[in-house]
Amino acid sequence: MSHSKFPGFMANKPHIAAQLTGHEREGLVQRMFSSIAHRYDLNNTILSFGFHHHWKWVACQVVSEAHPNNVIDIGAGTCDLSLMLARKFPVTCQIMAVDLNEEMLEVGVEKIRAAACEDRIHCCRGNAESLGFQSNVFDVAMAGFCIRNVGQLDIALQEIYRVIKPGGQFICLEFSRPTTRWLRSLYDWYSLRILPWVGTLVAADQTAVYRYLPLSIREFPDQDALAGRMRRAGFNTVDYQNLSGGIVAIHRAVK
Ligand SMILES: C[S@@+](CC[C@H](N)C(=O)[O-])C[C@H]1O[C@@H](n2cnc3c(N)ncnc32)[C@H](O)[C@@H]1O
Image (cartoon, rainbow, N blue to C red; front, side, top):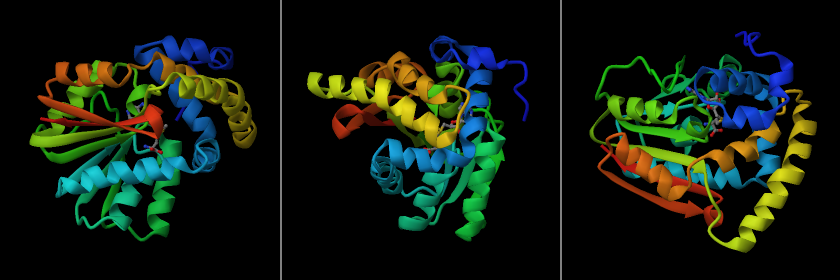
């Protein structure tokens, strides 16, 4: 996939990427993910000190409690969430793993093959803002660290709402706002000073994606604001749980 329309000098301004919306943001963000796809999993584990496995585990638990027959994993990336749900949880559902980024999905397809899960997890390229599925078809939509990156958050939330069956759920795992001042300070120091440096080194990245990451988290609505945006998209019940002191939150929105 080519993102040549977004030259390198723009990607080296991560604060611009974090503040952009629409197609410009989408293009820049995709260029960044293409650049790090093969080191994405390793960096996740290093930069989160392994915590991302726990966060994904709790999200899968919430999904499995809904006893879904089918699940759409939006912004599936390298398919970590889909694989964890299919392999480690007592669910027999079919999983549609959708992502805009070919390079990330290619890594995911390899992992699915290695785990012999091709009969359960199906990958396709698609945009969260225009998923291309019929309305009211999925029992559960889940998204891990995706919706912070979309070009138009409200459009994506409306689209996710559209494809879920009435009574179905959207389980959204996303970075959020630490709830105590001391944790916020520690997290700010780590995510602004240490994380970009380590992430860039490990991924041999030249697109500034690991400088964009903490900035995008700060630009993103906090727990209550995101719940409000979900309600505005049509979901009638929205609740959330904080993980790791609010560094991450899992929102559960019911259609
Ligand atoms: C931080 S990664 C998360 C990957 C995976 N869900 C995980 O938890 O490890 C975010 C993913 O969202 C995808 N993404 C961003 N905007 C998207 C959009 N509009 N539609 C579909 N996927 C999108 C990116 O391509 C990327 O693979």
